[in-house]
Length: 174
Image: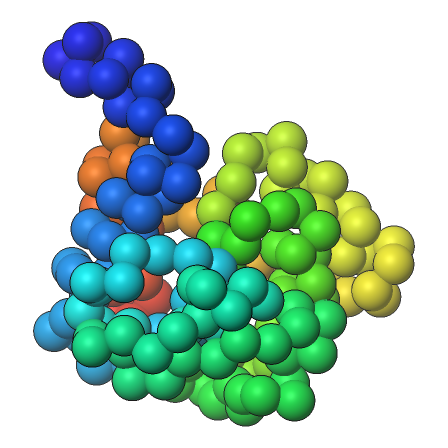
């Protein structure tokens, strides 16, 4: 198993994220809620309701995406409206972009808001959201970050399973 982890660690970062998001969203096909993915993922995925990215090459219509949006992360409300049946998964290509998306989604009625990242990164983003965006403690408490249920995940595929499990547990109100 250790050699497989070493192989994954040697892959370019974008391939690791693609694999994790691919496994996550493929697992969500049968679950009935709207998934908004902010950031890049594999174009062959199924189960994506809305893909939003600031980079045109990643925000293209794909066969298994209901809607693709290319827009500025600082003004996502111009392009989408979140409701109480929506699930927000933030996997952008930078901490500042994660912050911009979270600053706009934590005050939305979305049922779930989660962000990929280390504990350190998400702690910094939480503090910045309070200090700069004026997000209340109640709003901050809605943020699922780091995203996923603690199962000791070490590979992108295992991380995807932990994220899918978290989304399912929220849907099931566990």
